[in-house]
Image 1 (tube, rainbow, N blue to C red):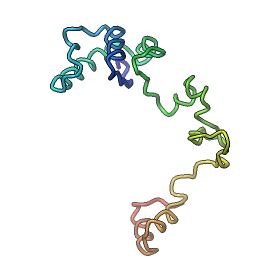
Image 2 (image 1 turned 135 degrees about the vertical axis):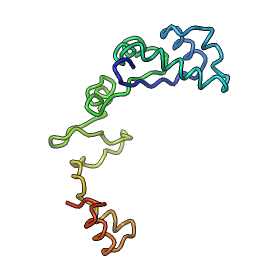
Image 3 (image 1 turned 60 degrees about the vertical axis):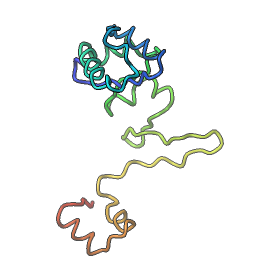
Image 4 (image 1 turned 120 degrees about the vertical axis):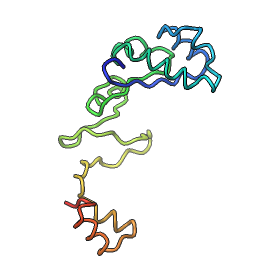
Length: 150
């Protein structure tokens, strides 16, 4: 997008593609051959050029809530506060850390207790042992700096 951010578009079915073309004001003479695989590289470049004309938030204002099959690509900082994620309870705060909530969620079986995320390297030895590495191999990996261990 114009601000260097990203959007995802998956308008494959004809009615969704037509809505994309209408909202994004894509020229019919360029975008009429949606189902011609030989045209896909060219159409991709042309669509990318159009998408770069507006910011991610401008495209979101135009397309979110339509049938375009569109979504803004959110950063990890933005995702927890997006209205869709808030409504679905997609993120939880454990301790001082915001993290994805367990999924899927079922009505008759609650998720286990959510624990804080482990620090990087907290479980390296145990994970490597489970993967079949010997203690000597693990020590070499840690001593060489290839693996972090807290």
